[in-house]
Image 1 (tube, helix red, strand yellow):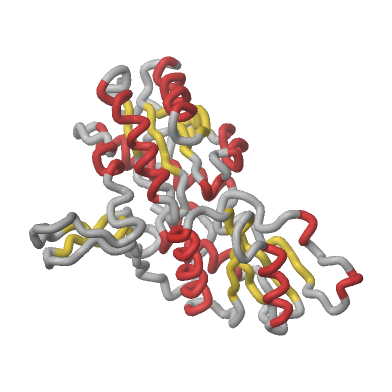
Image 2 (cartoon, rainbow, N blue to C red):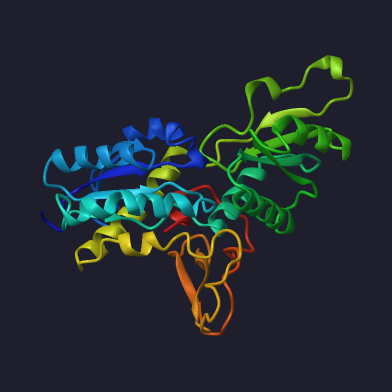
Length: 320
């Protein structure tokens, strides 16, 4: 294996991509050279667990190229990162030793804020913006409300609402809320890799009277932008792999602090630990954490964003 050999990439999908189904078209992505000299080819997309393990085994068996697995989260699925790491742990100790790497997550919460702001820029000044995503869990869904609030805070639209496919409120209820708040038009933008709205909700039926005109402001990212981010994550992972770091140990800790607050039982000693989920300083930064050395319990994760003050562009060059 040479340092510049193109890598095979496996994309791991969670609730933000319907288990990877909304990533299926990305198997055509090929970057033969790569901006930093490392090219890649997307070998497969898969959900964590056995499908992912089988996809990685297939990639390892396809030749002697390095294999990089990218957790395709937009910043609201730490479980995907941890589940992906668990699926890779035994492979990395066996047939994938020295060739298999887990990259940093595709995106973090502050990236998603920037991408949503860019998508919302297509909405008219008087439009309400409806941020949509598949329902996940209470903490993941609550995080989207926080993200939407920041999109509103640093954007130009006064109405930014949230709806969940298969959750509460659902997209139809989200559109209705926008209408009740006085919006004549609604632009839906997806906080996921899928469509923003079911086709039935676009351009509401005329028999509903003065209903809001609804348009789909997606996709969140174009394939070229996704390819640019995957290339950056892959190049960084290959660099670390060359120094003996496969990224799996860090991935196993991705869920730490996520979920309900807890203690470690009676007699627990004060300790410091990493506080919050990995984050970056701006859309181009690499995910990292801050360590706090003061005694405290484990509280629900709250990735914090150093939100850009300028409108974000949906281009790969803005995410490194």
